[in-house]
Image (cartoon, rainbow, N blue to C red; front, side):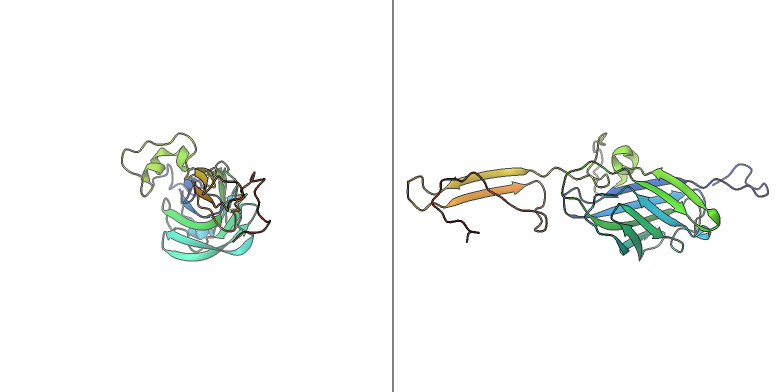
Length: 231
C-alpha cells in the first residue's frame, strides 16, 4: 500500500480496519452457532500486540468464561482461547497471531448458543487496543445483508443468487421464529366409552432440541383417562 508522503520523518498513518465482517452458521433457536470474523487493517498489527474486542453479542445462552475456544483461520491455522462475557463481549489476546503486514486478513471463529426466542440481527462492533496506546476505535461490523460483495463470496452461495436487501439468516444472532409446518391430529374411534388412540404428526421449521423444547397438547377435556405422564 502506497501512503502519500510516507517517507517523511515520523509521519504515522492513522490505523483503521478496512475490512470488519461477521456472519453466522445457524439461524435456529437454542442451537450451537459459529460466528465467523474477518478483519484486515491498513497497518501491520503484530508489533502493536493488539487485543481484539467484539461487542454487541448479548442474549446468547453461552455462560461467561475465560477459556472460550477460538479457531484461527488466517494468517495461519491454530487454536487459542478468549474471554467471553455473557453480556455479549469477546476479548481475544491476538498479540502473537495477527498478521505481520498491512492489509493481510485476520480471520477467526468461535461458537455460542443461540437464544430460545426469535430476534433480529445483532449490531456488532469491533475495537483493537495494544501496546504504547495503540488503538482502533469501535466500528460497526459489516454483515451479509449489508454487503452484497461479501455475501456473494460465501461458500455455498450459487452463481446468480438474489442478494438480500433485508436481514439475512447469516447475519449474526438472527434467530428465526419457530413454527410448526405440519400439525395433524387424529383418533382411532368416535364411539362413546371405547378405547381411543390419538395420533399426532408434527414437523417444525427448526430443530427441536431436548434442552429447550417442551411439547404441550391442550383442550382435551372430557376424555375418560387418568392423569399421568402417559406410556
